[in-house]
Structure formats: C-alpha cells, structure tokens
Image (cartoon, rainbow, N blue to C red; front, side, top):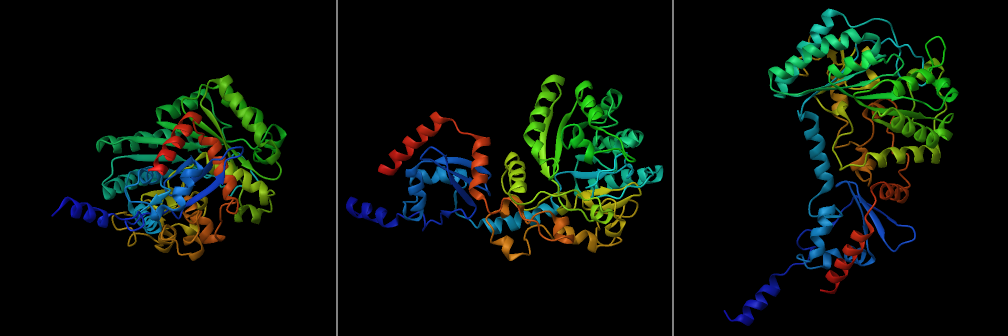
Length: 464
C-alpha cells in the first residue's frame, strides 16, 4: 500500500466524538458567573462544579462534531460534563447495588424513647422506659448475625432516641459488647450520637470518647428566647444557656454539628446564629460546625396541634440550597440508609425500623431484634412489606417525572419515608438551578490563575 493510500485510509477511519459515543451529560446545570465572561457548570452525576470559558462553551456546543481525539474531550470527560454511557441506567444500577451493598453494618440504637424536651415540631411520640437487659442481648446477637450475613467487619452505631443521654449506662454497656464483635472479625467500630446536649457534662463527654463516638448532632434553634420557644424542657423551662455553656465549657473530644431547624419563627437569625456558632468554636477550641435545615411536616406534631410554622417559597429555597450546596457530592442511587438492607433502626423494645422517623411507630416495624435473621430477611420479618417498601424507593425510582428530572442524581427521588407516607418532596430550589450553581461556585471557588491558564489552553485547542 502506498503512503498516500495509507494516509487516506487513516483519514477515512477518523471518527467524530458523536460517532465515538460521546454526548453532553443530561445532568449539567449552568449559570453565568457575575461580572465575568465565564460560565459555571455543575455536573450532578460526577459531583463537579467548575468554570468554563466562552471558547470551551462553544466546543461543548459542537461536541459531537469534534474529532474524537480532540484534547478538550479528556478534560470535559474528567469533569463529567460529557460522557459516553447512559447515566440514568447507571443511577438505576447504583440504586439496586446500594440496597444490598454491605460496606459495613449501620445500626441506629435508641436506648430509650423518653425525652427531657418537648419540641413542637418533633416527629416522635415519647414514652418512658429504657432498653432492658434482654433486648440489649438481642441487639448484640442481631449485630453479630448482620456482620456474618453481610460478610462484613465494620460496624457503625448512631445513638438516638428519645434522648440517648438519659440512658448513658446502656450506651456504655452496649458499646463494649458491640466493639468486641468487630474486634473478633478484625474490623472497626465507630459511633455518632444525636442529642439535645442539655445533659452533656465533661464526664459524659469523656465516656462518649471511650465509646468511640466521633461526632454529635446538637440542635440550636436560634439565639436565646428564639431557641427556647421551640427547644424547651418537658413541662416548660429554657435550655439555650445550658446547651451553649456545655458547648463552650466542656472539652469535647468529637466533632459537633449544630443543627438549626429553620422555620418562620427563627429564619431571620440564620446568619447571626452561624456567626455565633463560629465564634463559639473559636472561643472553646472545640470542633463545632453550623448546619441549617428547614423544618418539614410531621404527622405526629400535627396530631398534637403543635406544629410550628414551616418555611415556604423562597425562604425554604434559600435554606435548602445552602444545605445542599454544603454537602455537594457525586450522584448516588439511593437517598439514605433506609434503602439499604444493612442499615437498621432499633427502639428500646427491640422493634426494627428502616427510618429514624419511624423508630417510635411499632405499626410500621418490619421485625424484632430477637427474631430477624438478615440471611433470610423476608421469611424472618414479622411484616416484610414494611421492609420492602423502603428498599423499593431506591433507584430505579418508579416515578416518570423524577426519572426525567435533571436533579435525580442529587435528590434520588427524595426522602423515602415522606414519599411513602406524605408524598414526594422535591428540592425546594428545584426551579432555581442557576442560583444553586452560583451557590456551589461560591463555596468551591476557583483559583483565578488556574482559570486563566485553562482558558489559554482551551484557546490553543480551539485553533488546532
């Protein structure tokens, strides 16, 4: 074959990017960066947000006409703005896999459902009583069965309630036994706690450290009287000053996320409380972070007639956007542990649940710690429907509107408990994609010099 013929054959074999299977991601959202010519694009599947020059945006618009070996393709693909596979099908597969993937065992344990607070928006009915010795035995035995059935070594526990610090003796006793299970298997034990923080002392903090508690969530609903209006003692009484004193004066050996349940009565204090928490962290030397979250509906609170005013419209959008931008990550096939076989909630009587919002509701329990065997999960469940209904809310989402939505990699169909019992709950900022991209852009940032260098490189590529 002559050199001329060989060259012609090579030219004939050259494919465009479109012929090679490349296409623009279906999960891109974009916004113009103010006061610049740059465009910020967030890819919700890859979990990447970056700036792009006008030239890069042009190349993206004609992607399928470019040569498949054009150098910009590698950069676009690395950031996820283009791909050569079906992202929706990938989310479906990720959801199916997540239902049974045993990275480790996750137990949410409620040593008591009693609580010393009476918060109007709480989704739980509280009742007195602690986990008995017999139920504790069942919890340990169940943890062992779950580790064996999943062929897993690691165990993570979240202490919940009620108020778990009303039962510190049970936390300490169970921790030693659960840690022993992981040590026998050569694995690791870790824990976190959801507490109102009122009963926290240095002695208890030290005990929690011995119990491998690495993080705590403590709620503060505003400053002073604003907090006390919704986070008050059962029977009445303020709690703000004591919680703040505990966070300031106790040497906390674990990270604390201060959750701000934002509603109409305290939304005006979002920025002020954020500053307050930042100052508290600096003064105390403790690792304390602020975390805003909109209050959502609760059947239990509605029945009590104590539901506080909920955020609505733009207000909810701003808070929710701030929350989601702060935890931006790559897409996933499931929303939470409720959609994973190996994540289970246990109340003080040993009832098993798939969701934190259901731990006080025996009617939707799927089984009991004494009887349930995860190696034969449906046959040993006292109510298999209460197990499968949560697992089946993971991807593939049985909702065509969700399946066509650009937000699917981020919300994955939304909270499974709400989808099942109160209806689908979309992201509050669903109709404000540009504002969300700019919120991400502001959080992630981008070095100006790098941006200029990348812009120059794109210009050179466009000229080739």
